[in-house]
Amino acid sequence: MSTIIDAQPIAVATKRSNDVRVLMNYINGSWVDSATSEYAPVMNPSIGQHIANVPLSVRSDVDAAVRAARAAFPAWSSTPIKERVQIFFRYKRLMEEHLQELAALVREENGKTMSEAFAEVEKAIEVTEFACSMPQLTTGEILEVSKGVECRIDRYPVGVVASITPFNFPNMVPNWTIPNALVLGNTMILKPSELVPLSSIRIAELLKEAGLPDGVFNIVHGSQEAVEALCDHPGIDALTFVGSTRVAKLVYARATSHFKRALCLGGAKNHLIVLPDAHEEMAASNIAASMSGCAGQRCMAASAMVAVGNVDHIIRRLCEEAKKIVPGKNLGAVISKKAKERIERYITEAEQQGARVLVDGRNWIVEGKEGGFYVGPTLIDGVRPDMRIAQEEVFGPVLAIMRVNTVDEALKIENSNPYGNAASVFTQSGGAARYVIERASAGMIGVNIGVPVPREPFSFGGWNESKFGACDITGKSSIEFFTKPKKTTIKWNPESKVNWMS
Ligand code: NAD
Image (cartoon, rainbow, N blue to C red):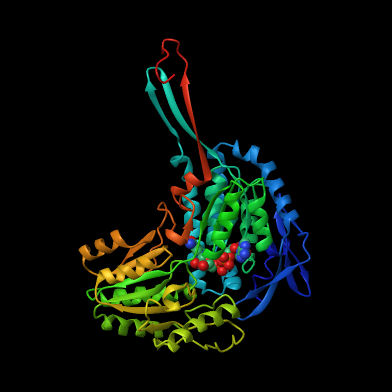
């Protein structure tokens, strides 16, 4: 049993049944039982162990959370932003103090390596740091538009926001929305992934310790039913979703059909365009890290490489780099047995269709962790653009290599993919890089960088079928999403005569 299981704060949020933690919802500052009778198992993917049961909440649970969030809204939204932000300075400090524990929790429920778990929490801290700068960024606008008449814009919170998150970043993705939305005066209901619900519990506890008033942040665990209830509930004003494109489309359509503001981030198929003049070592190490980091379960992971001309020297080096990445050592587990089987099916199907597996990560067993779900780094050459592995999101440590003769052919492949989260170019030519930057159809572009995640204050968000709705989810763009502008035109002095605008 890990030390985290015995950590006192988690015990507050759970009951025990047959020595497995049974999780509870967090409503109005208290841990409460769900009204459901259905629970899903939470697994530790590194060892394949059942570690908790999460309630699959029902509509009445969502309703209770909405009532709490609505009741908390008037006082929270009218608290000056300079006071609200003080809580997030404390929250940031608490995350720093509990970094080790938060990372261990991520590792336990998600299966990523400890250094990846640290990086995830560090990014959550960075987003919180950005949220702490909101008073500086939201000062409003004012202008005298005609003699004695001024126009001003003030930003108001949207209201109650729902945030629905995926399994791959149990701490970071919830924190993409929590600090920004709450500092801006909204109240929130988080619906974390039922596969990784533990980190959110600790987030709630730290927010409370930081001084967040009850009801401002609530958690409803669960899956489809809870999400549908959030989409339908008239007491929710805006909704963010991060997950697969299939579900992002369903959620976006459902939430907007109820006239909610919605921002739904979907899946990805990120292309790396590699030119022969790329720096061999830098390209190989960046590409290997991009395709294998977090076991390939990143929406920013490199999934397809388009080799332009002769880049055999880079592919050779890439194979050497990939072989240094070993499951159970510097490569974590994938989330489930089902995911492992799906990833391995993609590889086998590509092989059967004529592609060559250069490095094969199938059938990995890690000694001492035989129950864990591991796939080793896999490089597949000779992939054709019409193969399933070239078109679909695999979400595992697998890179499909396609060969073309020109940059335009590479861009045609990249452009024709329905996703558009990220794309990267590897070259030492500024002109070639610029050519790709201008033509790649993706929201985040890397030059000699395999995972071009924008650091704050730059915002995160893809294009095409990787994102539905306006605005990005973090950075300055999130201010637009989480607030509504009020435009006021003011005239006090009678000498400001009526004119054509009056
Ligand atoms: P998922 O779509 O299966 O689940 C995401 C959330 O939706 C979860 O909270 C889940 O409970 C809920 N859900 C699942 N099925 C549902 C349904 N039918 N109706 C309503 N809600 C439902 O995604 P996942 O497997 O947890 O996460 C992996 C996916 O997320 C990948 O596609 C990855 O690319 C994507 N992702 C995207 C980004 C981004 O920024 N674009 C970031 C992280 C992950």
